[in-house]
Length: 339
Image (cartoon, rainbow, N blue to C red; front, side, top):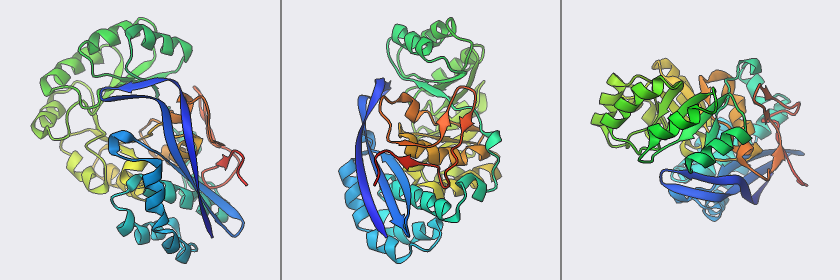
């Protein structure tokens, strides 16, 4: 068995802004796990907002290499349980490794993951395409440059409704609104009624995580479904979200990979919550893993590779009409220039 680390500086097509940060380059770590002539790949984007760097992920993963080698013949969910105690505070690193182990497992079983999970790839929901915060003119330009049936619009300014009204003049596509905890409850309730008339599908985490009173008020009075993001990080959060949100957005990097994400999706469904998996500007390595889960979801946000100038691999391809799964097994990933 061999574990290798591949560092990337992913160049974004446009500056990506949300309510609390902006970036032009996305550092990323791709992990490869090779065994018996087969290699699996996983990825996690290094996110300064969460204090995650490529170097910190590599350092964390080096601590569990021997554990992985000792259990490499086991299914990935078993290995996850073995390494979790060492990586429970390093979920981004844990995600990259778990993703690689799932890819390796699928390739060794000679099946795509979605087939191992008995999922129908024809039942994939349309992914959104993200429009980050910018001047209204710049946001309009991005929409015109990249026609898409479904946009996630990042908000958190002092003129959010005006932005949506202006964007609506230039496209009939469905909007999803992500205010990244920038609104107050009364503001979100009022905005929801206006936005519903502007063909907005749902609101994603408009309120601060600790504003439980506001979240309850919004849940009861919103004209649109409200989806948890920052409030749904790990498995134990799913049940907590049930009385405050209509659905949950699960991020593989935040929860620690495919293994816990599968359990979170099952738990959310059992609680009657809508399910969504989102991305963190990963390349095709990470997006191809998310795509394996997509047929079991109500919503998906896997546009990371679409936002990039330079990619890391071939794999799942996303178009405005459908998701094209490759013939390769596992997650379907083949890393560029991998030897």
